[in-house]
Amino acid sequence: MPINNKTKPELLIKCERDELVDEEHFGFIVLSNKNKAFDFTGETNNYPFYLRSCAKPLQASLVIDYEMDKFYDMTDEEIAICCASHTGEEIHVNTARKLLNKIGLDESYLKCGLHKPLSKTEQSKMLLNSTPVNILHNNCSGKHIMMLGLCKMKNWDIETYYLPEHPLQKAIKTKIYDLCKVQKNYPVTTDGCGVPIVSMPLTNMLQGYLNLFTNPKYERIKNAFLKHPYIIGGEDRTDTKIIEHSDGIIAKVGAGGLCVVVNSKTEEAFVVKISDCDMKARELVVIQVLKNLHWADIEIDTDVKTINGKIVGKIKILSK
Image (cartoon, rainbow, N blue to C red):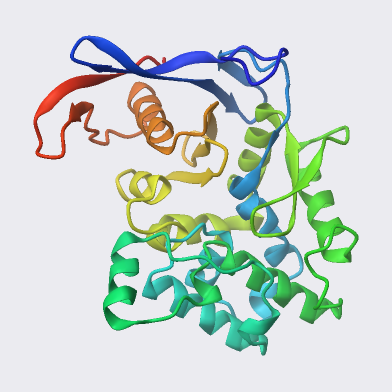
């Protein structure tokens, strides 16, 4: 099941129900140290993939570069919300609102769009209390607040911060290319939240994460992930589960079946890309790779069950 005729993804997940294969999920796994990528599952042939929300910590490097953290006296929680794909729970909304208030702007400036919180628990609470959806429930609201904060302190236009030709977006692209050691221009699109997002080979993504999370200059971003994993994600989020149940492991999910994981102690990293973007398959593969590398031992349920809990099959994880 190739994404295109240049790639050859490998079968990573097989779901069997009463001895018949019911689902298959293909994808790629790449493992790298700071010098080079050294282990590949599937053949990407350097095909570029969009970073999607895996770009967030790379984008947030400008918070440190421009000393936005000092300018607004940002807490570690507020740095975390800038990197988050959060589930819109109270802790996320309150943290985002505090940072927005520090910047001196209100919610009307945010261009990320409106959607229900990703947290099912929060959705239920809001339904019971007749609470309307707020733009701060958007999983990318923290990133957009960060962008507004950078614009305000740099005296850049606030109204057009999301456009590709804006100085902020140009600075972000330059910074990501620098961290990821990208030597040529790859396609750029508009992400779901309305801002530009770049693409690159998986090996470059790993280079960027290692250059960010192993550099003492960006210690505050690393600490934000390790100290506040629930702000980074939230209820039932893969990256939150991994950080909470490991020691020194940083994880960040992105749409399109992506997850990047960094071992801050060994200074190694791996990325998983699931071709059909299935979130459950992504989580199972990532956790299995963590087990295989002896980076973490997180329990996963591989039983296929009915709603009443009867086991009718098994999920086989075929990754290395």
